[in-house]
Image: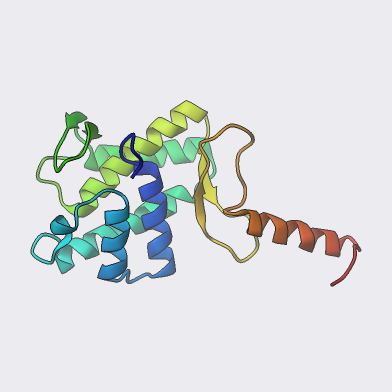
Length: 181
């Protein structure tokens, strides 16, 4: 969590990548990730974050992973609209648990999955309108399916990391007859 507030879009990316890496996302991994994004550890104790809550969150993160892999702005917007229609309510400002003011777009009694889908879709919809394109995507490197977020200036990002970008450039250079290792 940044000092300016929640990083909802990055939380969506991180949870989506986590369920891609670990389809049965272990409780310890999920809770550590949620704490890193501002949730309080007390709220994630087994009495407040049950096995059913974890399953619901995993399912929601899988759905978000599919949405985050969509590069077409029109299809991404349609997918975001579908999630918002199913899971969001009128946004409201909220301040709780020592956090600064932030938006909630889920019902007050929403479960973890609905909360995650509504908040993620709202954040991503805002980014799509701000950038005019999805500022997220799936890494273009062969064999890498890591999702990434790029909200800074410059061209849209194609790779999740400089390592994947370099590996792709080196492979292309070698295919063109460049120097071999």
